[in-house]
Amino acid sequence: MTASLYVHVPFCVVKCAYCDFHSTPISQEPGVADHFAWAVGEGVVHWAALGALDDVASIYVGGGTPTTLGPALVSLVEALSRSVRLAPYAEVTVETNPDTTDAALVAHLVDAGVNRFSLGVQSFDDVVLRTLGRCHTAASAQRAIEELVSAGAKVAVDLICGVPGQSLDSWRDSVERAVASGVGHVSVYPLSLEEGTPLAESVASGALAAPNEDVAAEMMELASARLAAAGLRRYEIASYARDGDESKHNIGYWTGRPYVGIGPSAASMLPADVFEAAIACEAWSDPGVTGVGRTLESVPAGTGRIRFVRSADTIAFLRKPVGPPEEVEYLTPAEAAAEDAMLGLRLADGIPDALATSAGSAEVLAGLESRRLVEHVDGRWRVTHSGWLLGNEVFEAVWNAGARRGLVWHSL
Ligand code: SF4
Picture 1 (spheres, rainbow, N blue to C red):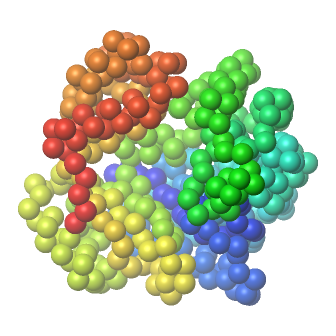
Picture 2 (picture 1 turned 135 degrees about the vertical axis):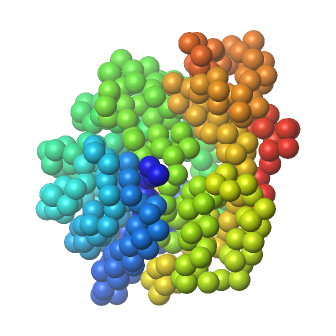
Picture 3 (picture 1 turned 90 degrees about the vertical axis):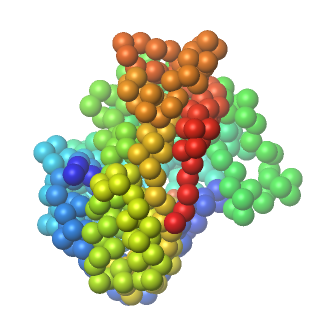
């Protein structure tokens, strides 16, 4: 089985004002980073023993900010390389932030096998960075990019548009500086106000203006045109890359490749038979999961997929790196197809006819074609430029087409 491996590092320098990811400022207690690296190593050994990591197409160490672990991150990456069987040309990505990107650490990570860094820049405007509660400046982001590029690894940067107070000129300048930096991959996201975050509270209290969707859409269009002109092809709704710099790991998510997630709150998605092998192991001897196993006995052998999520409790993970999941979902083959069709349409290459048919979405896609939101070319369905602008409507329609046929989610 070809799979991806995701490691979630739940630590950051500080919590950004807009962030609802599972992350906390890293503890200053000595030994935490080393203990975390050890715990991840235990998790990898467990999944490798079950045969889930025999052919790993990509590793992504994300979070959080993995580089807050410092030298322990190098040990963590070395442990991964020792335990998994990496496919030829496998992509090994580490997420980082400008203020934790250190030339010596980067060099050691590259020596340990990291060949791609994803750097959270978000903006090259210090005022916008302060609104977002980022702990770095535009100058430190620039320095970090230079260090990563000179280390010889591929570099991806993220930018956020539609931030309160962000002008079109400020956004244009950030896109220009991303292009000028020479990175091969840029992701562009509109700001999403997440409930309970300090930024959402500032907007609710009137201290900050609410993000304007039309302005954000205009900014996305500006970025799309400028990045395309610079040779960065839009290969996914929010992702632009030079040829060969596309994210193999993310393409795995969008094309239904199984993945193993390790770390607090990490999700995994595996074929049902691999999951059943995990249930049988002693470390998972939990009555709830055993019950899931009994329910799976009614599933035709070897069909469908399971998605499951570890507890978000970091202390619990450090105490017991290998343990039963907190949530489990079973997807029938038809449900899995509906999900693959919805996610595959995020890609510029779209989905083949066969997948549209097994997902039950061919009729809905024909309807969307009449509105010019999708097109049918050479046996594939692809979202058009107008469709990108209404992406959520298109994806929801395809997903609901599956749901109308009774292909619904259920938790066990
Ligand atoms: S660095 Fe990323 S994960 Fe950490 S708080 Fe900021 S947005 Fe969240």
